[in-house]
Length: 376
Ligand code: NAD
Image (tube, helix red, strand yellow):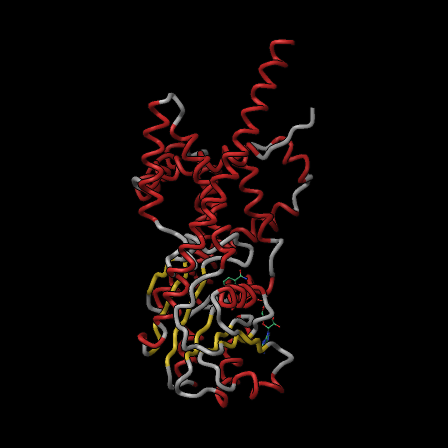
């Protein structure tokens, strides 16, 4: 027992030393943040990150420390660093912009963009649901108008903006669907138009490494500054057509949200208690429950709108139902060979991603297990 106590105090001392080193590192990172802010450099520097991780992995290996351990720790530290680099604000890419109006700016995503634009030195005004009587004054002299209202009122809101828009204004939106809002923006406005879809929710720690999808409307040279600004915040811009975007979202959003909703609905009707399942769960089941449960902590109307967006979504959801039925037949008929054959077909379809996903998910599972707390 004495030996254990002495070893534990040594570990405590080392942990304190680690905290001191972390504090020192965070202070240095904070200086990096200031330099990046002054020079308008993006928060996320992929090449520097990659090279640094590779070098530390090699050094760790030489010292008998598992490289994966060092990579884990450094990645976690870097995530913290990206968030702390935000504190200094960002360079204002377009100093000529006097005013940006966010329609729906009191909402979750509009509020997030208002925060980032403010932190980059832009003057941002909000036009929310109760502000339309002052719309003239709010929109006067705005150089950019960003629409971020619930999907169900997006088209009518864009239409409502029509009398206030002047040709020199940039009209953009952040809607999770792109084809109809973009077409509506092009219809009501003769100036620059761009459709954006941030592929993240309002609860992100920072924009580093996040994705923003961009669908060109008109006069891309007039909104290039906004894309550059978003990249300085750390996000990656992917430009696709609105049709390509909406087609991909059938799977990335509609199908996934639908399947998650159906899973939650099904579970809630089973004779089980969540606490009991959690106590016995494997890390992967815990993670799966977390992914399902997380949906129900969010906005039901947003998900309803995303799932119901277009007929293609319903077709794919129906085909999921059909696949469930077909998969069930293997087990109704005791057809183990048929199941294995289908399994291998899917495995071939995933190809090398299958191995990559195994590796990635292993790390997630270990993390899920780290968060587990058994009372003694
Ligand atoms: P939200 O409900 O939090 O915010 C919407 C805001 O719009 C509210 O402040 C509301 O008062 C305002 N509003 C409603 N009707 C209005 C009107 N007629 N005129 C002016 N303002 C009006 O919703 P949100 O989650 O911020 O979503 C906004 C947009 O962002 C949606 O198009 C959504 O598809 C998109 N989006 C959301 C997320 C997310 O995770 N929340 C992610 C990506 C994209």
